[in-house]
Length: 88
Image 1 (cartoon, rainbow, N blue to C red):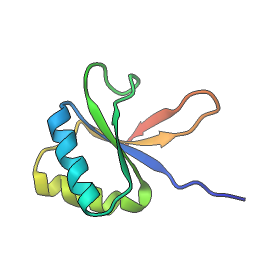
Image 2 (image 1 turned 180 degrees about the horizontal axis):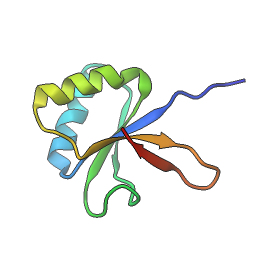
Image 3 (image 1 turned 120 degrees about the vertical axis):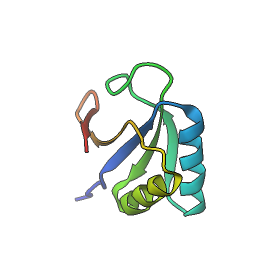
Image 4 (image 1 turned 45 degrees about the vertical axis):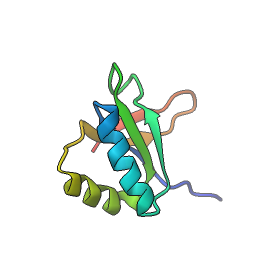
């Protein structure tokens, strides 16, 4: 039986801030993906960084270093047809 690791999204309202955090996480060798924020979380042009639970401590550390608070961090809850999101 394969157990999938939980995935999360850190959401920023602007592309520049999300890109800054994304680049910092890549330098820390985190497996991250820059994505558009799902409509269920935010309308508009917000950007999110998708990451695995194993990188949570590094993500939180880098958010503190750049001193720009995200709109939120969400756990991705997999459903059969659509994903849901739980704010952390």
